[in-house]
Image 1: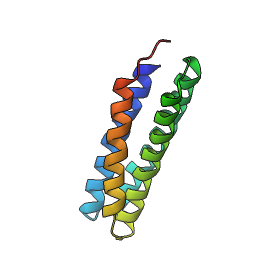
Image 2: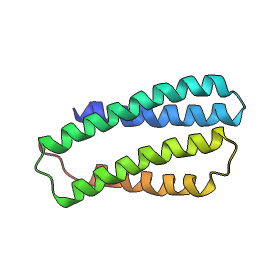
Image 3: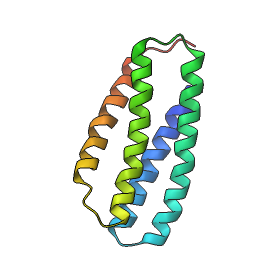
Length: 114
């Protein structure tokens, strides 16, 4: 399940970058399709994360990682929605970068014994 979780995160980040690039180029219709697939990967990432969280003996830091992961997913969606509506997304993008760094650090730092 760890590979599924990491793969869904990787796919979500690639789809996020693709949708962001398409929105920058003014191609709203293809970006919308990519965004819909991205939302499916949000659900897969969330589901595999919850499964892993309940299969291990978590410490409080694991719960922090789970909350930060949910924040990252929310910020990904907020960045794309702001970009789609041509609103400034600088602050949300900066928050996304910071929280993404935190969740990746915690993901590689915390040991998993399933």
